[in-house]
Length: 148
Image 1 (cartoon, helix red, strand yellow):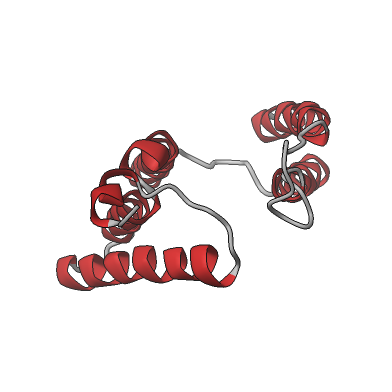
Image 2 (spheres, one colour):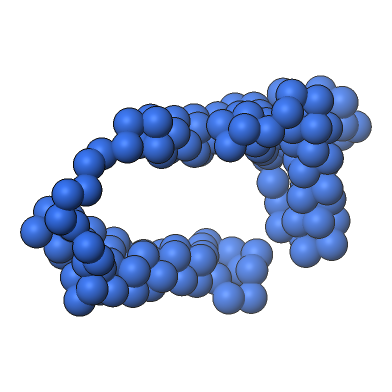
């Protein structure tokens, strides 16, 4: 019952956000597909998942809330929210590295491998987007190291 109610609410939210995202337009052409493709793709996937849970919610008799999994999910949401809020002030490389490190530790990664992979992820993804795909990304606090 609750799964279907939540899924129906989420589906309605996805539909509303899709209408909002349909109007996204960039004042200049920086991307061949435009700014609306990515949000519409994500909203379509979330809507399809919600529709699936409405049709087939799964077995719910005797299910209890698994507190550690719920806390891990809430922590993951908090890390992603912090990533979105810190993206411009800290820049892509630093914010991506911090988010990758936190998510790695959240999913029981070891400290040193999480730190190394987080820094590599931030640097390599910045190189991919900025230099190969020509998508400008904010440097944030690392802007002082770049020549003007």
